[in-house]
Length: 132
Image (spheres, rainbow, N blue to C red):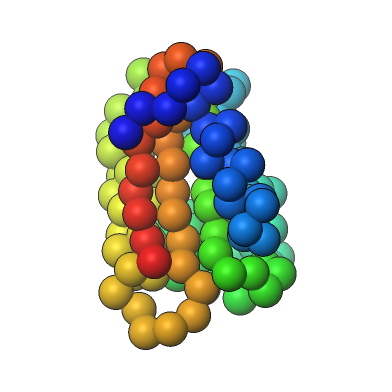
């Protein structure tokens, strides 16, 4: 899926207009797993007991009960190419965790869904990982 000019702007605007919770995960400057986990924890507003590892991130994305009530959730991941280039194995794992979370919400019964969008710089396009 490719979006014009600013890849996420139309999707973010539509989600916000629909009353969704929009979370922006900007990976600019993140070069290691510890930094990634700190950035994710801040953006997702996870509880203090967050374990800062892949399993904890997957668990947090499958819960999200601490976020405000909303008809949907959008996680917009931007500026990820630097991280992907520095840490290709971790980037692959992060994508698997995000896809797993989207699948969890898509297959779940009731409740609020999660959609994940991956985008780079303006004009770079976007890719959706859809949940319900």
